[in-house]
Length: 257
Ligand SMILES: [Zn+2]
Image (cartoon, rainbow, N blue to C red; front, side, top):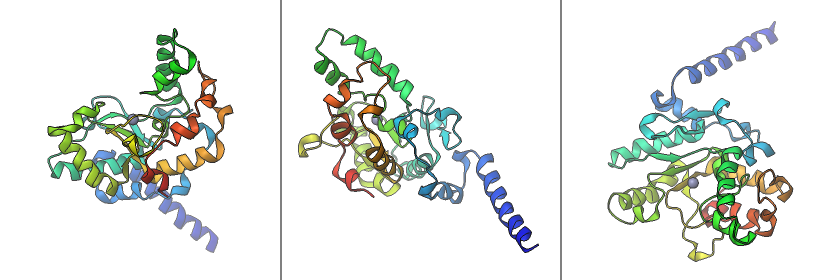
């Protein structure tokens, strides 16, 4: 009997939590409910190789949310915890007259493969190293993009120059001062201090409370054998994609735990 009472007690807690988060759209949630999402225990991530390689269908994944129209002109999905943190950040930014719009969020392996292979074809007359490096200026190899993880957002403009003056500079300064408080970090910082990989990206912000777990899992479990299934995949090990690109991030991001 005592066991049955315990069971009913826990079942009622479980049921009430579930219905609360399923029925209220994220954008309309009270701060308390948003906080529940943000503080979700990290050991519920259940990481596996498919997840870190982007072999996922995030549109049908209950741990992902669609971003509301007011925050993006496109259909964008993010992990719920990341979206909750973004909403808190947006709210704070608006108070300082800074508007944040998401240009890109989650992209899976198959979407990245389509982008990659289109460019692979475009540069077909170049030798294989130049061909690959040209694509890597602005695009990741499928299976190696942080955007696979649902933890990354590109904000406001995909042009660094935009952030150098006027409105863009104000937005960038605000993000530099406040984004870390909400868990977001610029990972593709200036390369002059020894970072390898992608060029400077002032628009790309990574939610490190989750992304750092993905990177740790990636480094412990993924090898070049796993980077297959697209044209030009044989170049991955030759160009040290895992060492120089996947791990070519800011010192703050490397040291985050
Ligand atoms: Zn990005």
